[in-house]
Amino acid sequence: MKSGIHPEYGPVVFRDAAAGFAFLTRSTLRPEQTVEWEDGRTYPVVDVDISSASHPYWTGRSRVLDSEGRVERFRRRYGRARRGGD
Picture 1: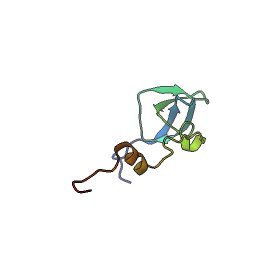
Picture 2: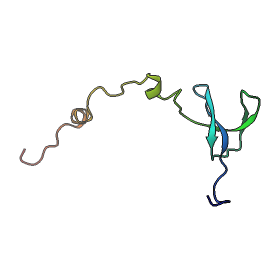
Picture 3: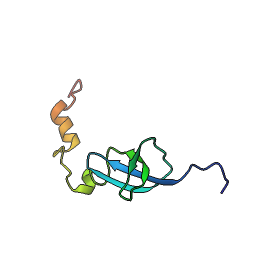
Picture 4: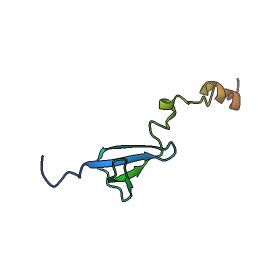
């Protein structure tokens, strides 16, 4: 590899505050905030909106937003467009 052109790759904590879940991994991201991890060391932390702990697909708490099809819902809402001789 060519030296000096690649970003630094190191430990980073990703934290999902909504689910109270965090994990330590490696990344090229370098955020300004830090957090003290379970091992007593301080690591940069990235706050994420959604993770495997809060995503409906992974948690099994998915909800059905629309029980009827989109075409049927469109037709019910707007009806069929009528043209001159129809």
